[in-house]
Length: 483
Ligand SMILES: [Zn+2]
Image (cartoon, rainbow, N blue to C red; front, side):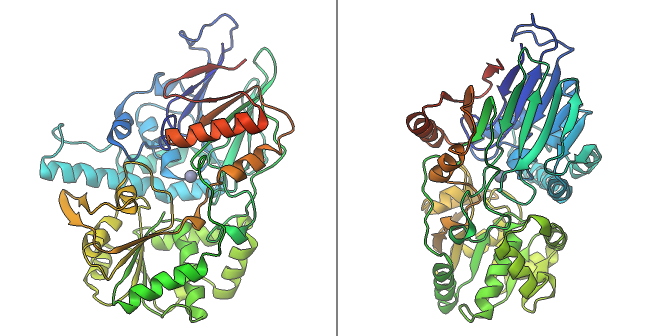
């Protein structure tokens, strides 16, 4: 039989990894996948956050990596793409299919992830804080660079034949630059079946209620899959609808008045650039003071170039901002720190400034140094504009922890902490249901993934009660036959 097995983002939001095993023989059972089966992965992400999940980054897949023929990648967030270099290291020789913008983004994100993995291992070796001697990186920067040659760019809407009776195409998911859903068609099964993997679903309604979004709102409508695998990050949330700009200006203004700085943890590509445009606009309208802005990311300059290259996906709001202000690389008062020395010099600055740095959930990268510097001072503001997964340092700070541990050091949290949920790149529960209402038929089965348990269960109940569909919440390692 053919089946889907959930190897990640089941019971948690991270580690997205769904195996599809397409049987070429009718008699094969679920337990004995045949070597002639066609195996592919939809997404191949890192587990982040809670330790019990992070440890799964080190466990082997239930099938050999060398037997998997292809990876279809929905988008460039690490929880969807960050395990690819490890898969390649374990013997995967196939092709990784992604949209052109996703390929470009992975070109800087994966090597950076490898660099951070190496740095992490080096830190544990120095502290002797790992059970393993020596502590090894999950993969190196070099390995991450090597796997880039296996990527193949596939534009939205173009159908790709993967094998006899197996094809797919990308449709828009409106989540981040390049983000797609994977529509997979199986003609080799007893009956022709379509599978839709949503990846992450962006805002369904337009941008007035979703500022800071780069791409068009509105995932592709009118889908008609037989099997739906959908995300549930905000399956129990209703996003606020008020305009975020006055609140943003007030928060920054108050911090500056106190003589403090503003630290913004943000995904280094796209979200950082869009946030810079919003800051520029607030400054041009004299709604916040013209203080120095630092984009502290080793890939900052390259990231701006990628961001500006993919104008075809932008929302009208983003296009207007870019037309008005041009490249952030040329703005006075905006600085891009590429080297460690430049990054350190930001730490030494004692005047109010705005520091945007990654990673967005405060679990690695340069943001950690800024938090060590700025968290203990009540004049400063830590501003969250993105999702913080359970078990991450970002989540602890957001939920009011009085201290956090960074590089083995206890850091007191005395700064102001604020959260602006309007910036979300994920649809909330109302928007998800609105999108499902556009389906042309009821799927035979719907599997909920990519949510904390409460959130996944809330979405399951909402779909069951409002649409009367058969829905299950996927469990880690669960196998489901494709009927
Ligand atoms: Zn995502």
